[in-house]
Length: 411
Ligand SMILES: *Cc1c(COP(=O)(O)O)cnc(C)c1O
Image (spheres, rainbow, N blue to C red):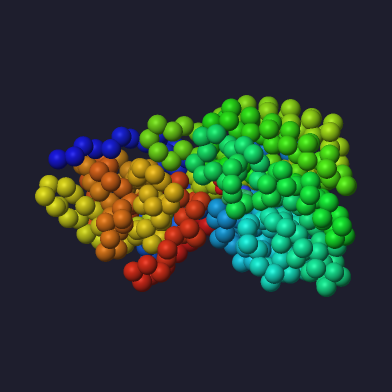
């Protein structure tokens, strides 16, 4: 028989009272009653607030903090964050609506992403949000739409740098990419934008995601500022906006540890000083998605059946990959690893056993935990998947197998 998988770093962010996990001061069993059905996602608003506070404590005060809505677009959560961050970054017309509904100043919303349709660009220009052009076609469309609507568009060029964030879970810069304008093409397109009567406010340079290596993030930020200073020489007008990306990761798997913010804060202070010297009109921002919300969320599913197959125990739950593709290992993982999982209403127990937690879908991919040691669970118990506040429900194939949707609550 196969062995138990290695253990995760302990989940200290959620309190445990009377052996039951607490979310926002409410016991998980009570919260499940309040929600009325499983499966559900629960996001802890105090943890999100605390995360922003920790970041602000380390970041130099001149660096603006943006939230990337893509990580979790739940409207109540975006509203909660809207009052705490300096900007909201969206990547579709749908996310744009969520951001505008919060009431933040449209100039503090930026819209990036490849393949923006003319309809989306028109919405964005009409709303007065900052549009990040990712191609020559987009620059031309933005100029045309601005003229049609009688609005001077707020325009930033998204740049595909010639380097990438090392140790990044998902590479989104460097080499040939569908994202942004290749750095070497930028001088030509800056000239084109000028000829079309557009004022380019600055640059957005994002080079990767999910890095747990502070030194790699510090180094990438320095190279990003180098590139921005170089590009500014080709710009007909001064740089007023500079978004240098983010890429701060969170620990998902055994052996991973939380990112050390102290060196990143020190590195950013150096970069801020360089920006103030070379690009004195530029507001410097970073954009974070998962780091702000990922650890504050859990996914909760109920045990429907407990089966033993040829000596292996399977906990069959009502939740699975249709709500949480990432925890099943099918959202960008090369080798499947378990997310941290607990039995939320029975956090500790003398009797423990090695189990696989699966969902109700008729596919072997529907796996929430593979051969993990957990307290012995029974039908009716609540399985909790941690680190589920980002790239959860909205990043999952909800229609697959036609099961009910998951509920989302902000507690
Ligand atoms: C997805 C994305 C982000 C957010 O990445 P996280 O890993 O969630 O922090 C930021 N910027 C851009 C351009 C993105 O596409």
